[in-house]
Image (cartoon, rainbow, N blue to C red; front, side, top):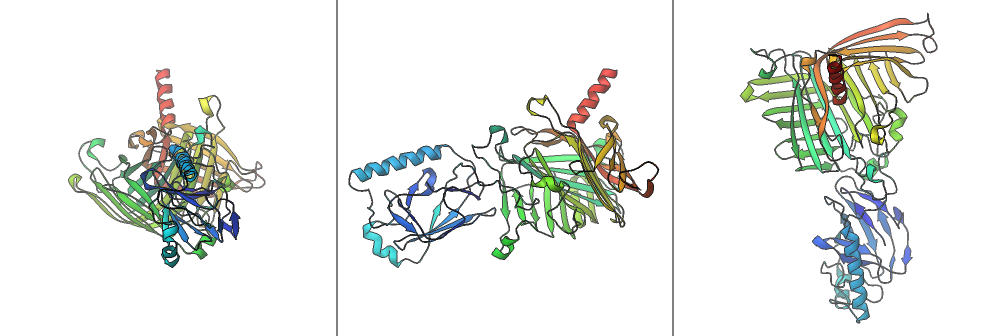
Length: 540
C-alpha cells in the first residue's frame, strides 16, 4: 500500500516511493478509498502506470503529491492535518477493500467500473474519476483534483529533527514503532523570550510551552516591575524587587509556518524557517529569521515586544547553539537551543487596573527546549551587561533513568561573551571539565567552575529567596502539568575569567576579566527547592 501521511500537517514517511520517482509501473494501479469524516486514501488498485511522482516534505501547513496516470487524469493531493492518529484507519481501510472486492465479484461497482487503467471510483463521489461514462469528460478536464489524506501511523524514514533549524517547531512523531515511553517525540516544546530595560530595571519574559501528547499549550508571563513601581505593602502589592508569574492554558492554539521558495528549501536549516503561534484570547508570537514579535495578555497584563538584531550564540552559524555536536543526537531527553544572547528590543507592558505601565527599549534573550522529559536538579542563569557588550548564559542538570534507580552526573553548558572573549564550555566536549559545583537552592545561589584548554571561568549567581516567582508549570510528564521551576529577575551573576597554559597548570593562571551582571535571571528546578526544604526540615 502506498501511504503518505501528516502529523501535524507534514508528510513524514514514504513507505513505497522515493521522494522523486521516474516512470514506474505497478501491477495494481491507483484506487481511491473514502474514510470516515470525508477523508480519502490513494491505494494501489487496478492496473495503471505512474509516469511521474514527486513527493515533498511539507512545512507546517501542507504537503503536495502529484501522480499522473496512463488514463490522462491528474490527481493532486493536499496533505492536511488532523488532531490525532486513529488506529481505526486501518480497520476502515480493510472494510473498504473487502467491500470493493465483493463488488468486483458481483460484476461491477455501484457508480461505475474501471477498465484500461482508469481509476475505479467505486462508491466514492469525490469526482476524481467517474467510470466509463465520464471518461471523455475527464479527459477534457484541466483542473487538478484535490484528495485529502488520512494520518496513517507508520515509522518515518527519519524524525526530521536534524534538518530543521532548532528554533522552528518540530513535528512530533506518534509512530507505534517507537517505544511507548518515547511516543510522541518530542512530547513537549517550549520557547522563552526575556527582555530587560536597564534604564528602568524592568524585566519581563514569556514562556510558550506546548505538550504534544495532550495537545495543550500554556503561556506563562513573568515580570519584575521597574524601579518606578514602589508601593506600600509587601510582595502581594506587585512592586519593585519581586518577580511574578501568571499563566493561561489553552487547547485553542495553532502553529503556522512561513512559505519559502525552492531555492531557500535547498539551504534548509541554515536559518529559521519562521513560524507563528496564536491562541484566541491569549495572544500570538511571530518568529522570522531576524525579527520576533510577540503580544500576549494574561490576567489583565499585556506584554508586547519587538526584537531585532539578534546576537547569535555562534556568530557564523545560527543553527549552532549551546549543545554543540549533541544537537545531532536525535532522541535525547531534552534539547536546549539559544538563538539570541542580546537582541535589540522595543517593548510595552501594562495593566490599567494595577496602574502599571512600562515602555521603552532594552535587550532580549531568545531560547527554547524540546524533548521527552525535563531534566532533574536543573539550574539556569542568564544576564546582559548594562550596555549589552557582555552576556553570560549557563545551565546545568542531570537525567534519571526510568524508575529513578540511576542518574547521570551533572551536565553543564556555559557561554560567556565580551568584547575580548567568546568562550564556550560543554560537558560533552573533550578537554572540558566542570568542577566545584555548589548548588544551594533554598539559599538561592549556585556556583561552578569551568576549565578548558586555555581559559577557566568561575561563575556565581544569587538572589534573595523572596524575590523568586511562584512555581512555573510545565509538562513534566506526558500527561500532567506540574511545578517545574521558579525564577528571579533581580539576581546577580559574577564572572571571573582566567587565562592559563594547558588546562590550568598551577602557577600559570592569570585573571584577565571580571564582570558583575545586575538584574540577571536565575532559575532553580522545583525538585531542587523541594529537596532543600526537606533538608532544612530534617536539620530542625
